[in-house]
Amino acid sequence: MKRQLTNSATRTGCLARIGIAVLTLIAVRVGAQNTTLTATNSARITTSETGYRTGLGSYDQQLVYSNDFSRSQKIAREEDLIEQTSAGVWRRKARPDPEAEWIVEGWGGVEVRGGTLRVAPSPFDAAGRPTEVDPDKRSHMVVWNQRVFPADLRLEFDMTPSGSTNGLAIVFFSAAGKNGEDLFDLSLPPRRADYPNYHSGAIANYSDSYWSRNTEAESLSNRNAEESRISGGCIRAEPDDWVRGNHATTSKC
Image (cartoon, rainbow, N blue to C red):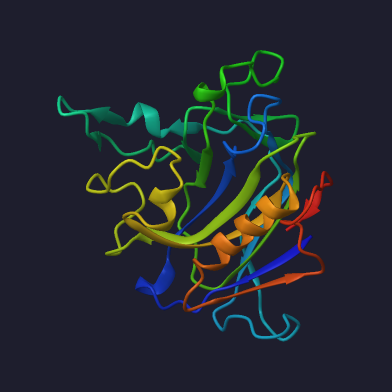
């Protein structure tokens, strides 16, 4: 699946971050198998000052980020940067290490292995397999790239669900605090991969749900929920809608 994401750049210049999310849908057979997303060895982001219209041939695109996942990459975890007060409220106590390539929200597994960035709702074992945990111990996962990207961009990556039988994959882009704060500003509440914190919390972003492994009705509901978040911008996708139905192929995004 080829995705082109177009942003109107109306929000604080939209110098903001990009993240991927893997949602293990509780309404689907969460106890059956682990949901694993693998971003394979092709991740590229290009930018153009003039933005996109109907084609890209006349635009001067510049590569601003590329990652083939062939090297060791530092991963920071939100869980290590937050604390719970005596009143039970979660708050931030530190910002991510600036040397971290990825910042993870949620308590599942994230690793770079074999030329891939791998994400699962439970930690990986030494062999790279998601560990078996009780359904209530599984986690939605959001993985942010640590860089702040330009307003007009084109994002390309390959994804494989690695045999998952249920779940939803989303890419968040042009993400920042609603008042222009950095995503990891200490004033913002922790998100902990709880989906309402991304679509109706303290941050603003665009999102595109590009893969799911659910029933047709559940997938349609997922897509409608995502489309309701789009405002002031446009998402163009071709050739097929891979959010609906029961798919298990590698997608080009």
